[in-house]
Length: 485
Image 1: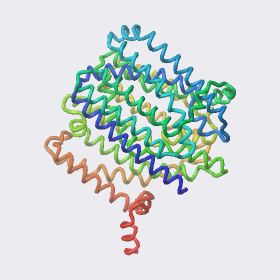
Image 2 (image 1 turned 180 degrees about the vertical axis):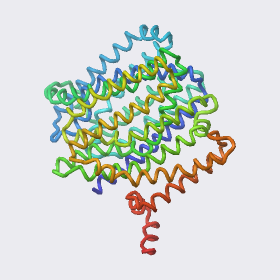
Image 3 (image 1 turned 180 degrees about the horizontal axis):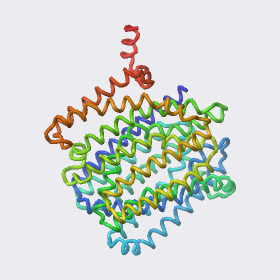
Image 4 (image 1 turned 30 degrees about the horizontal axis):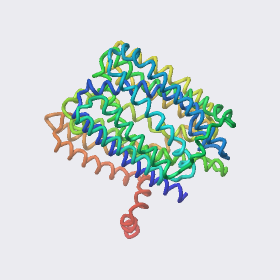
């Protein structure tokens, strides 16, 4: 347990650095480039993300969850991944003129040529990261990821200032990937893994077959609104929706992102030792929602000043969309835990069936919303698709872990009270203010501070388990609690 906590602390620290880096990049570039320019990159990355789902047929998760791992397994995984990467890169380069014509964006052609090179650099250290995760070596992973992210960020901002427009993102990615790949090989010079081999490819493809389809469906659904908005409305609309999702997902990345890298290896280790995952899963839900839900509710209430501060005045149109999306994402509290717990239990086929249920239905509903309602409808549609996906996902996890609905309710009710206690003070501030949701920066800061006070009071009143974890981290609080007792 101590090693898991140490790894969790290391991973969370890394994720916070990455979050700050990405946050600074998006905030600064959003002030340098116009939504139209950023829209070109958004469309290109949406197409790239969909194409990259094919690479999940050689998923690195296979290496993490495998009970016994040989060199042949690793070499086969790299060989298959390299082949799939080559197919994806070649297809994107050849198809780029057609894609550019379809979106009436000739700028997509040079964009795809550059990021196709990035794919090979990413492949060279993706499996090294997987091996490090299996060994719980999160210090090295942090060094690799932070180096790549900081280099990418600095290059993107500098190139945007230099007038490279949408291509700033492509060249920034290339520079960041190159440095990350070099450091990964320096820290873990496993050059033997680059020798081609297909000795043990069947087990990997068997796992990756399900995982690849799951990832493909998810990536298509994730990219669908951006691709449709870019085609049906405009690249400007795609950029607005992309920034809306980015801001809406900040609480998720801030609260859950660091834990996810540790969860799969930790859950897999628990299963290998014959332990039950029911208790740690419920405990994780309780702790996550005590942070995730309050952050989302406060984000929804303070969306207007947050968008203005983070992105600037030219993105004000995204604020009402952020309010809707933040409410919808309240139902996503279990998403990042469901995948690792199911993979750890060897239930990849269940994940496949779940994906076949949720993503086609959600994709059709979202497509209809975008085609007939545009940007606003895409945001409101999430109030249907996200709860639907949450219900289906939890039903599969409940069946595997033997959970009852009351078990989940018991783990979550205190977090719900904490969330409402956090949102109440900012709502009161809006009710008092003559400007409604459009609070000034000073008013927003005061409202955020009052939200923290409400959150703290909620933890104390409900005696939430998160309070105990906070006390364990800070010795001064522990001594104060002992003296009061």
